[in-house]
Amino acid sequence: MKEDLVMDRLRKNGYKITPQRQEILKAFIDNNSGVPLSAEEIHQAILEKHPNISLDTVYRNLNVLNDLEVLCKLNLQDGKSRYQLSPGNHHHHLVCLRCGKSDVIDFCPFKSLDQQKIADEKNFEIKRHSFEIFGYCDGCRDSSVEHRQLIQDAKSVL
Amino acid sequence: MKEDLVMDRLRKNGYKITPQRQEILKAFIDNNSGVPLSAEEIHQAILEKHPNISLDTVYRNLNVLNDLEVLCKLNLQDGKSRYQLSPGNHHHHLVCLRCGKSDVIDFCPFKSLDQQKIADEKNFEIKRHSFEIFGYCDGCRDSSVEHRQLIQDAKSVL
DNA sequence: CACCTAAGTAGTAATATTCTTATTCAGGAG
DNA sequence: CTCCTGAATAAGAATATTACTACTTAGGTG
Image (cartoon, rainbow over all chains, first blue to last red; front, side, top):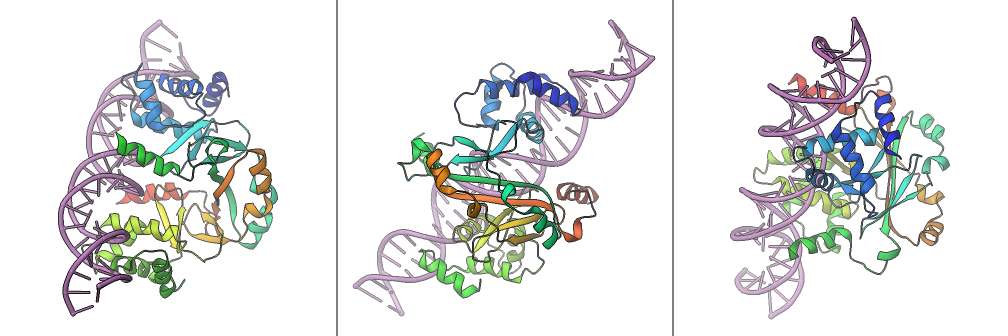
């Protein structure tokens, strides 16, 4: 999503355009690594130019942008949340347990699940859902070592 | 799952039977509230009889029991993880955003998703997946207030 | 353009979870 | 039954995230 569209979406939902929000968005636009960003990474990137931005502000705005579906929040099972620009339409993810890269899939279980049946049988009002697939991506299939383990190894070297 | 079966599963996977593990399991067997338990709740319950058990031990063993599929870990979107005894077979959950009760559903998106197609198209090796449905259960459909908000309200009263 | 107010921010404290390290213990081998 | 070793534990530190509070500011109104 383009920067202007995001600003429009903020405005239309009653959110203000602050320099902090613009910087956070820019961090995502500048990220071309393919790996979703963590709150701490975004915070560090912005600190270089704006030494006063607080980590709390980063977290708060990541949640705002996630609620507005500008970003999607991913759990790569490494103990922290990571975020990436949302493609806009409803989707789910293939997440690599080794390198952390995430790929979008259009398949949604709700297209094949009879929502009405669940609503009737269980008398349950569906509001939202989550669906993520974890495994090894193209480049990482060789290794049997998982992301969590690799991170631990990396830490022990420092 | 019965207590003896859990102990067998621990033993067969090289885990030891410790008093702490037995107490944690008992906390789940004793829980008939229908609401999954948080780590802190389990810790408090055990502290009455065993004042020395550490919260870390509770967390560590919840993860062990989750890995062995004795328990399932649920995210009720209220900022903490909750756990309940697993029915044994593969399943997913309907989670109520208001009261926190969780109901098991047998539907699994992978039965209708062509795994081979994803594996081929994306060259992705699938290891595991998550699928949860959030909404309002039978008893909570009236209210439009969400769990998170109710928890905040409750806190402000204290 | 100055004013006003709800929304946003920084800083700090609180909470949830995991890690580290030294000590203890379960349970197999002798 | 005793010894031994890897696994488990307690205690406390570290990390990830959210909440609280007083101050600041975006952006609408006159």
